[in-house]
Length: 621
Image 1 (cartoon, one colour):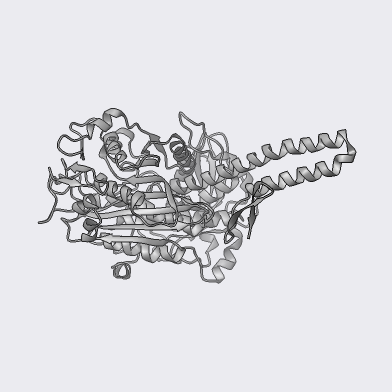
Image 2 (spheres, rainbow, N blue to C red):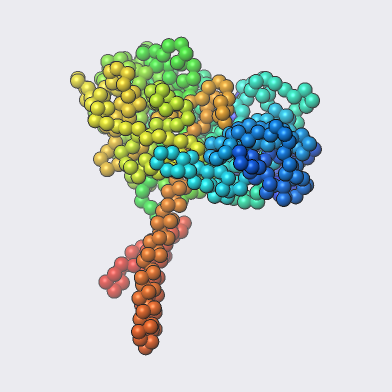
């Protein structure tokens, strides 16, 4: 199925950002990329090459620093700016004399301002049919994370700026044109009459030699574009079977293990009746796929990412009206985000353990469709009265959540769950299309996800699950109802329904991405036409930020534990030189013991505990 689809019309391939210094070597050899599908880098016509420099409202931003660089690159010969250059976030002005695009960042640039500026600059360069675009990174303190009521903005590090420059440029160049008769046309149909010849895709360069950061940005940007590709498939192509095949083809070569594939009546036999009933009305069998990436073998714990994958939602027998059904091929963006986030994590080889769970169904009308008022027994044993067949996503998630907690045979034990779903239209009404709604039973997890949102620009906002919301989904005849009566707090009652399927002691967060994760037919801001790809950058930054925090805590623990021992040794040395050797030896033993206890795990080596002189020690074998 997947092979047939891609042979007919291949997915759009991501452009790769290359360091400017390495452009000649890249042009002389075939491009080797992380995905194996990116467009190669050829020689660039430098007379048609543009450079983009970023301006803040208070000055020229990175342009002054750029002016000190070699004049052999476009825009490197001076720092003067033409009259009319604007600095508002997202504005782009062409300085044709120096072949520069001047992109405004606004007065206090945030990561979203920076992404908008890069996106508009890339689109303008594409419109002008530039052969290439050189991105001049601003100073690291020029761009900040998002600030909110809970946390003020903070400056991004130099490596963060380089990485996000690459990632944002890759996503900015994205166009879902695989089904267009003339690929490469601008979305508004305009063409540059001076350059009608097809000279291939524009090349992207960056004025940084931090190749590892650039590579990370390329990987993340490509995975965001892949999520978009998966979401943009229409219902005749994007069926449950295809996404299952994608997981097997794309993730297993990266070391991801597919643990379970249940489909059709096997779901019913396994007790996953909620998921099965949602999908049984379609001619395409429903699927549940569980896959696992183990990046830290020394840890016994894992985080599960659970995604709603309704490949098309007509509403079932409670059919959606005109105007509400046309974008429902995007109702699987929770699953697409899970799949591509794990691809990014595996490609980057992050030392984390992650389990992916996706429920893939088509909510269709057919002879075997489930009915409003049906009472169905879930995998957990709770009965659910279906008051509305168009509230199907929570049914799919309920069984998927139970399965990963109770039934899945995994290498690591799941102690944290993050689910993502285009679940309710109410979250779009409440929060708009910029932020996802965040519901959680764990304060620390909620704060960590919010921090990931600030760094990535994929923002989330905390929402409540109150007792009134839990009461609203309690049933009279069955244990639960899948929708509450009335129009109050639709997102909160949906999250309250899901909370019934979380085991005691499990840390859980639910991200309702119905607003931020579903796009339109036209570009909006830095989002392209079609699927936005929201959540991939958020989750990758979430996992990496947790790794940084753990490393920081380890370092603090090392300092606070070792310092008093050292002071004791110094005191012993001052008081009695005859005991200096013994005191120093004792201090060294204790410090060595502390270092071993907090040593970072190394791949391929096992940790064992041994008893030695009445105390526990750790050694490597």
